[in-house]
Length: 245
Image (cartoon, rainbow, N blue to C red; front, side):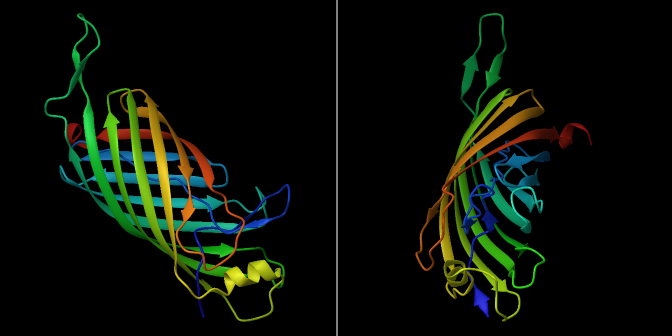
């Protein structure tokens, strides 16, 4: 039987309340040219995130993301999710420059528009105890973004639109309350809107990456305790491979 849910279910350690929605970290590379590779690794408030992106041409790029929740870190739940996406970007920087001083060289400011779309899949396990449910999760997403990029600083605004489904394992009696059962027993597809602010600061090729994400459910087929905000921090490395090969 087909069920619907967003990317993860977590239980807040302080209140043992199940949450059925969380905005996970977004991959916003802001590429400006071909053969750029960006790799990041870090954490948000609930999960460990790994992301990679590569610009195949001056306008085409792909990305791959993963998220992992360590059992026992916040709850006894285990969550693993993988995602692949293909995107288009354009660099509008032909006549935009800033001058940092009379003795400093002019530094180009890149204005970048990008849009990625992709598919994700994973598993959710509420625990090994008998009666705890587990599920396969799938997601289709569309993520446009617009940003400003210099050598030392980047800022971007993005919005991710997601369509999420899951398939519950088994058809037995589960050790969950009625509210949770209504979530697991849902048969509708769910849609979410997630605006996001991304800031990267640091050196030319290595930066600290910070995000703050909001979340809005666009459908109301199930009741859940929403997490409407998330924050993520990671280390980002951007490598210009065209200068190496």
